[in-house]
Length: 224
Image (cartoon, rainbow, N blue to C red; front, top):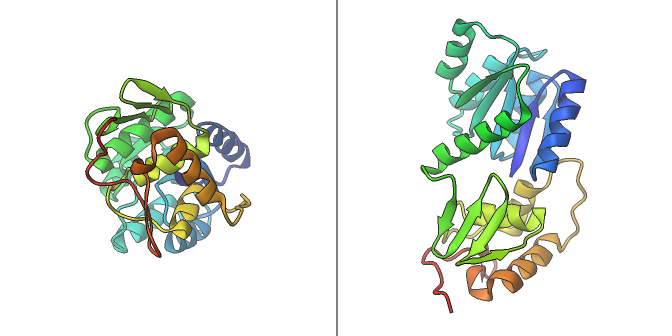
């Protein structure tokens, strides 16, 4: 999943970027509110980590502008403001959750997963589609009782396809969801990962609608 990190403190931002990438996320960073708002207008993100104390335009302004455009992008606020009134203001402006600095990084990852579940309408911590199961906490994947070993990028691609089974995603859209601004993308990168997923899961799990994109069938394939 591709995240936007809106944080003006360079040291905090570097720490978060490193940890999030190690956890399998692609991360774009905006150092002020104007840059964050522009990024949100131009790019589709799976989640926003938003500091309230941004220069040029504060986090609440960025959040209100995002919601005013009708965007449902999940937003998790990261801030040193621990007053109850500030937490209420952020949640009422449309934030999905709120973490006060300093925070434990593992707790942040758990809150990201919880926000993802709520937006997907799931209660279970596991993501299931027929015989296919994904554990977002450990990035483990099972097909039936067999564990399937995937690379970080293969896992991210499968996770994106499973958000809406039956809905094709173009190569460009998948690239935008999987790669950040500072990552080089080979012209056939998506196709290479799709080929690997089909080899590991079976060709019937990842289908291609010619000229439109790739998708996981809405009706899960039968186990053979």
